[in-house]
Structure formats: structure tokens, C-alpha cells
Length: 204
Length: 204
DNA sequence: CGCTTTGGCTAATGGCGCTAGCTTTACGGC
DNA sequence: GCCGTAAAGCTAGCGCCATTAGCCAAAGCG
Image (cartoon, rainbow over the protein chains, first blue to last red):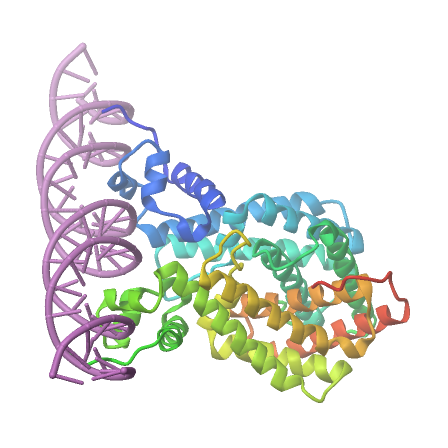
């Protein structure tokens, strides 16, 4: 039996490809094994099981998303950064629907000490960091910054999710609607930045 | 063997309860059958299979959501209606997490002529109707109305989904953030209503 | 009172996740 | 260059779940 030369990363990457093609909820060890040219139990040499695969896939997707958001916003600030971030976010959700869906699963709580869960939690922080720094140019602090990030994530995710779920008719106008909504959020942020809120702890 | 007196509605209702307790992705015919006091294959007398159960559950949840939104906004208008709608929406998502998740699955396309799929599509329109009429007081039309609904749904859904996924830290301040974001969206809508867009076809 | 419809059942099949335990490949130390 | 060991594959087998086929009793109706 010649070796297939797999690794955890290779397995996770293949899993994300499967998720993109058939949907995250239909991601199956059997499918991944087949596409890796390997029998199902062999995967257990690289991941601890299906839940662990999900956790690692989520982490990998989140890191990929963070990288793309970061690349899109580097060197930009204010509304410019906001629009670029939004474009990149939606672009990722459309290009990699399965990976994006993986991004949204709740990172398991602190109680879960498995490698996959810790991986996932760490990756989630990366994305938050990028979004926070993209919003830095608006000069928000304290509660304002928290609310700004929450609102932006809600808007971006909500739009992406509804789009992915086919929740919108009139597909031809989606781009225009999206940009308009993001710009409006930017205006809201600008109005906040003139009336600063209290100080500390910008955790999400 | 005494009869259990099941019906399709009873099975679907029990399925939604299971989904609320263990998560929609862990909704299983076996669990529903057990809780109905019946063997698994007996369920096939009432629903066509697991996919059909999901479709019917989605439709039932959507109808329930539409009813609650409608009850919350009746007799209100403008920002008042908007806030009430938002509270009711988030309340439903928190109180019935499994049912709410069912709400988000894309209704199968027109190609799917199964009873469950048609049911689901019809129910989805109900929700849209309620949201549209809640926004009627803002005097929006044409593209503005479309964008308003899209933005509101994105914000509400995005927030609810991120909250359900544990995507926010600082849970104690979520209520305040939510109200603030909804109010801000209301202000955006008010600014749009003064500069009307083109006319027709307020489909979503 | 008998017939039909209906709602339950058992049995059997196939797919998948997972574990156990075996074999072979690659690699590092001598 | 050889040998021991760890890593990476395999087969076999279990249990759970969805699905189908076919049986049987209970309700409802004349």
C-alpha cells in the first residue's frame, strides 16, 4: 500500500472543499476519505473524528477569512476600509459557501479542551482583530466600538446568510443594496464618533 | 397495540421541540419517534422522511414567527413598530433556537414540488408580508423599500444568529446594543424616506 | 356485522461513524 | 547500510440511523 502523504491540514482543506460543494451539513468523513484516495478509518490518523474535523475546518476557514479581510483593508481607513472589508467578507461567503458556514458555528466553550476547539477559538479572535482595526479610523471607543463591531458583523453576516439561503429575490440588485447598507452603517458610525461613550474593554 | 393518536402537525411540533433542545442539526427521526411514544418507521405514516420533516418544521416555525411578529406590531407604526418587531424577532430566536434555525434554511426551489417544500415557500412569504407592513409607516417605496427590508432582515437575523452561535462576549450588554442598532437603522430609514427612489415592484 | 382505511408494528438493508488490531512504509541512530 | 520504531495505511466488526417492505389490529362506516 503506497502512502497517500496526507496531513491534518490536507484533510481539513479537502473537507472544506467538500463543504463548499455539497454543503457543510452534508460534510461526511466518507466523502473526505474518498476524495483523499484513502479508506475512511485512515482519517482517524489525522483527525479525532467528525466533530474534531468540524472544529478544525471552522478554524481553518476563519483564518482564511481573516487573511482575506486583512489583505483587503490594508492601507485603507474610515469608510474606504469599511467598504473594502464588506466586499471581501461577502466575496468570501459567496466563493466558499461551505467554509463560510463553518465560520459561523459557535466555538465550543472553554470547557472543551480538545485541540480542535482551542484552534477554533483562537482563529475566531483573529477575525475580530481585523474587523476592529478596520473600524479604528472611526475613532470609536468603549461601548461605541463594541456596538459598532456588533452591528457591522450582524449586518455583514445577516446579509451573507440570507443571500446564501436564497432569502432575497431580485438578485441583480443585491450588489447595490449591499453597498448602500454598508455605507449607511458607516454614516451611523460617524455620527457616533462625535459623541463618545464610556471607556474600556473593547472585547468584541 | 393502542394507537398513539399522532398527526402530521403533532409530529412536526414534537420535532421542533427536539430541535430546540438538542439543536436543529441533531434533529433525528429516532428522537422524535421516541418522544412520540412510537417506533421510528411509524413516523413515515405522517411525514415522507427526514428531509420532508425538515421542510414542514421550517414552514411551521416560519408561520409561528410570522404570527408573533404580527401580534407584536399590530396597532403600531414607524419606529415604534420597528422596535417592537425587533424585540419579538429576537425573542423568538432566543426562546425557540431550534425552530428559529429551521426558519433560516433556504426554501427549496420551484423545482421541488413536494408538499413540504411548497408549504415552506408559502410560509416564508407570510413573514415577509409582516415585515413589509411593519415598515409601511416609513413611507418608503421602490428601491428604498427593498433595501430597507433587506437591511432590517440582515441586521435582525445577523444579530440573532451571532448571538445564538455565541459570537458575542459581554452578554449583559446585548439588549442595549441591539436596541441601539435597531434605532439607528430606523434613523437611516427616516433619512431615506425624505429622498424617495424610483417606483415599482417591492418584492422583498 | 363485515369492509376498508388507517396507524401502528417487525424485519431487513445500507450508509456512516467509530474502535480494535494488523501490516507496511519511511526514517533516524548505530 | 541495517535495524528498530513510529507513523500511516489497511480490514473487520459494532451500533445507530434512515428507509423500505410487508403484516396486523384498531377505528370508522355502511
